[in-house]
Image (tube, helix red, strand yellow):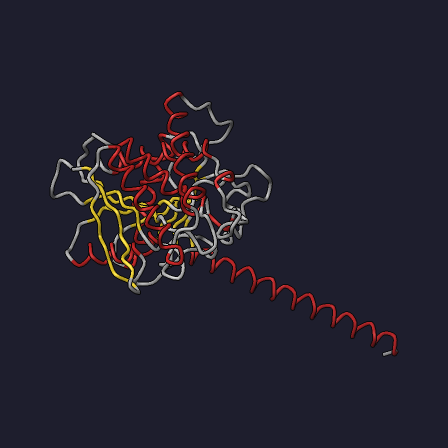
Length: 350
């Protein structure tokens, strides 16, 4: 065999080996991606998400929108950063929530606990149910903000929605009791620890054997974008979810799958607003998903779902000094709040 022929054969063999290596690498990457995707999520949800131009707000919805905008402004601008390092501000936020509940007609109750010489409180009101034996429904939002942040989207938007849905439900009665709760300490350093308000609440409920149909957490509901590639969900390996951040997301875990699907179905059946759902196969949030209050109920063995704008996967200034009220879209927050009212009414009636 000539030297040139030998070199040609060696080159051909090398190219073949490189192609084989590339195919193997691609297969490994794809297999890993698929395994991760299906380990972490199920995405199939009942009903159809809304598409198309949003209809004009009704006169009643305009009133709700303005009330939501006011709540966000008071919490994020008038009060500002509110957490363990700004404890006076945290108490002002609690006082505001308490007074708003009283203005509606509720009689708030408190779950107080001591931590490093300070008293923190969860704030609870309830709507009585017709059936005292029916498992209760809980909806909640944490009212503190991240360090060095006024926390407009995270989480004045969630608290504002909590207050206005409590107003919409006032005076009504359903088959099961609804508890509406504003939690303390949902942000670091207490998030994901036994000192978060939602952990204390969920563990107390578990301790006395409370029957809970499910818990809905409202966490970051106010930031939306119509820009291409504005949504960057890390679980979006196969681009199942939209790349435009104009939707609200419901997040559940495997044990909460039925509850989550029921919630998103009710939302879609009642509300002309884009919505998506995700079921985590593991009892953790997908990477990048903000919010912990629903996770504390998962830990206690209760079904729970978080409604969210997906936080840091969409909002580039979350947890920063730039999370101000002017960035919260009150119109869309109003539409989401209306959908949540419908969800609660449906879940509380069956």
